[in-house]
Amino acid sequence: MSKVAVVVDSTAFIPPELVKKYNLHVIPQILNWEGQSYKDDVDITPDVFYTRLKTAKEMPTTSQPSAGEFFEFFTEVSKTADSIVAVLLSEYLSGTLASARAAVDMMPDFPIEIVDTRSTAMGLGFMALAAARAIESGADYKAAAEAARDFKDNMRVVFVVDTLEFLHRGGRIGGAKRLFGSMLSIKPVLHLEDGRIQPLASVRTKRKAIKHVLDLVESEMEGKSNIHAAIMHALAPEESQMMFDEVKRRLNPVEMYNTELSPIVGAHVGPGTVGVIYYAES
Image (tube, rainbow, N blue to C red; front, side, top):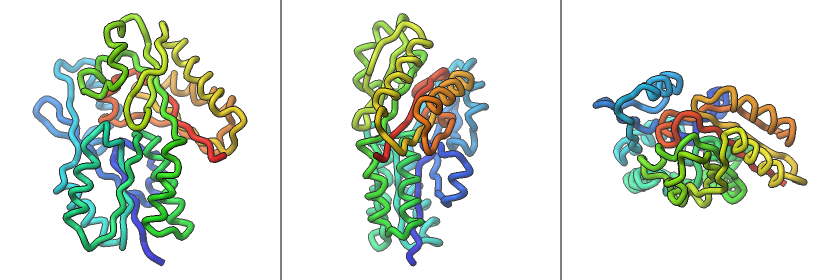
């Protein structure tokens, strides 16, 4: 049987027990801060990052691995695999896809399939898990990539930010830019639509914004079965736990996680962000 390796970028922030179980290979994104470069969740972890961010005078920036770094990473993975499925964040949020594709062109004799998830965080993570589970069932690298892509249109990422400032500063604000002028008086409810950040609602308080998200999730999943869900948060453990408990109560998912956002994602959405990632198999 062929050995297919699954590569993900670090914005997925898949729970470590699943990374180990499925032998996922994680290529870190880069956080640039005050003259230093840090590998995401390698040189800087979420707790250190968010604590430092609260008092930082200079805001961090982010960058994707270069084509050369992808080439080196793929080459290392290829030593123990005969093909690769690389499941990566939306090309509209990062240049990661472009770097990965350039690296693939440098390895014409090694089979690599690139998946643009049009997502990030556990939206990306769930699609990587779909690929890994397909491989576990005997799929080759092309079938595993299709197994991941099959969830792309059904995967929902909905979240609340404390402020649009971080998205605006990082250039990832997308269609939500029209809310920017009133950001001091609202808590924006946002979502990923075809890989871009778009507005869903403008709510006056964080509590009401979270309720709006929970009600939306329940409404969209009504009558669906085999629901998978993950809560994501950036320095908002109490709100994330509340959302976790409520989604579990309302939807009874077959698979569910409570996850942090990686420093790379956190640098763009800011502390206090909470959200839900979910899809139904049927």
